[in-house]
Length: 189
Image (cartoon, rainbow, N blue to C red; front, side, top):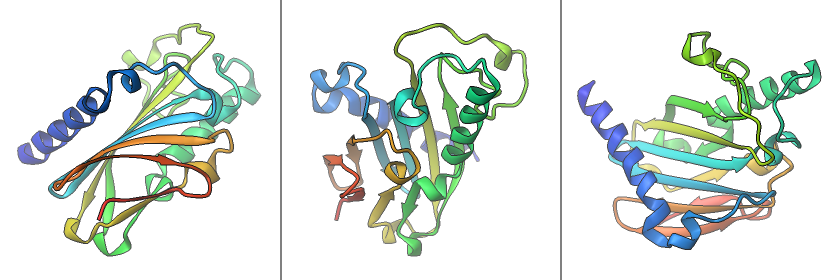
């Protein structure tokens, strides 16, 4: 258990460093509607993914969800994002399964994102003209050596995406890619 936690933390640290490893300009790029950022790291049998995207790409709005219609839209979005196997479709032979999924946005109430009701989850969302969502995923792969591709289904699940800038670290190399609706497969072999 401790080894898995250490591996997950090291993978997350790698993902965090990706923002600065490739270019400081990329790391501090402005909030752009239609554009998402995805950091990915493969470390042993774990794949760590971090998605940073304007809420506009996912919901069509960026304000706090106060109306029943908006709250329902946020809950539907969260359900889709929590279905990691449909959002990130890995090479079937690798047998990757999600072990951790965390969704967070300063503009949205954590309970709407599927977080259990705890004192920390009861904090009020902040107001912002431009709000993002951060999603963190950890996948455990039974056969990591067979993992060759990940199909990113964000374009089919959320019509607000026009492109996704990707930074990857694999055991063999570091890569950058740009995904579009017509080309949404990550490949590193």
